[in-house]
Amino acid sequence: MAARAPEDRKAKRKRRNGFVEFGNAILTFVVLAIIAAGAVGFYGLQQFLATGPKAEETAFVVEKDSGLSSVAARLESQGLISNQLVFVLAGKVMRKDRDIKLGQFTVPANASMSDILDLITEGKPVEFFITVPEGETSFQVAERIRQSSNSLTGELTTDPREGSILPGRYDWVFSTDTRQSVLDQMQARMKQALTKAWAGRDTSIDDVIKTPEDLLTLASLVERETALASEHATVASVFINRLRKGMRLQTDPSVLYGLTLGKTVMNRGPTSKELRTETPYNTYIIAGLPPGPIANPAETTLAAVAHPAQTNYLYFVAQTARPADGHYFAATYAEHRKNVAKYRQAVKAAQAQAEIEADDAKEALEAEQAQQAGDTTQ
Image (cartoon, rainbow, N blue to C red; front, side, top):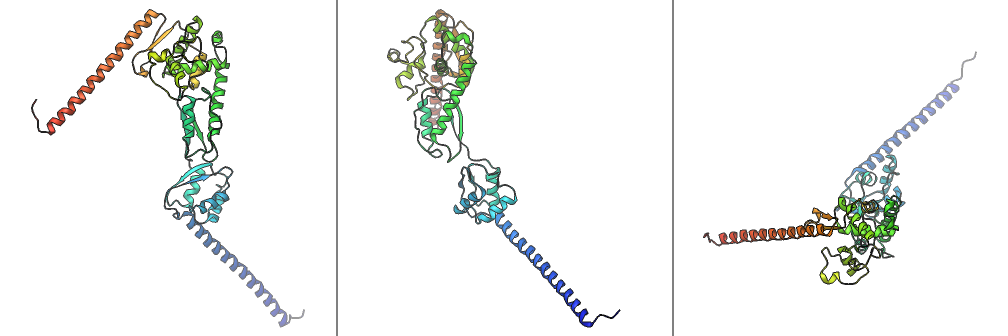
């Protein structure tokens, strides 16, 4: 076999050197790319963890249907982050882009991008809510809603009917719910509660409580008569017993409601003149139930009226001037008069004790003043 020519060996070495050089170039490019990516990543990580540019606590709203990119753009436009691209990339790398919560968040001063991303994906939005107390009138509730000007938009398009609102706590999301939508929620819950109470009622009450509206009206009277849930079923039994005997209900809260229609709530007993003032709600004058509710009763009160206690009581009176002390109940007028006497005695005793306490306080202040003036005589 003939030996290879020197030219062949040179060409082979040249090709081999070319491959090595090309490989070295590729390797160098890869290494440089890795270094560059690492540098960019390190720079991005530094920015992501760095102290934020906003020097004061700031409210930030994540609106409905907001994505990571739109949130990042708004954060940058409000000066809360310095680079929206870094924020978006970090959110995707950390797989938090689908965990963004709706609502308003309080971003602390100088919060980093990391802090903000954690806040809007794992934190708790600012709570916006209204609590409707048991026994409040619809006029009062509407005023509460109207006064929530810092977190609700729009106006009430309807005036709520008395008794159409279920007491309780109602939460909403800033920037998405309106005053009317919150009221609609309150009324929807009352409708559900009333439907449930009526469907599950003790049908023995049907002789005097003939409709869900009757149940709602009686529940509002019970709600305003006693603050003790433990007494609701018993008070309901008194009213039902009186209705069965054709007796007037003679409930003070309805008399007072008839004077203002719930626009002013008077937490006191009616005067002799008010007891004689003719209104559709004056149950000392009219027979049967008043024409509608006088307040918004709680769901538990609806249930108590739907299942009243089985009693022969026809009367009740407060035990003391403190509502928390509850009532005396009686089946006869003679017994009721004795209970009224006990109530009056308790009120007088409380007034006397208050006067004694006031006198003691006055004496202590006078003694202190005398001592300060240097009068040490006794």
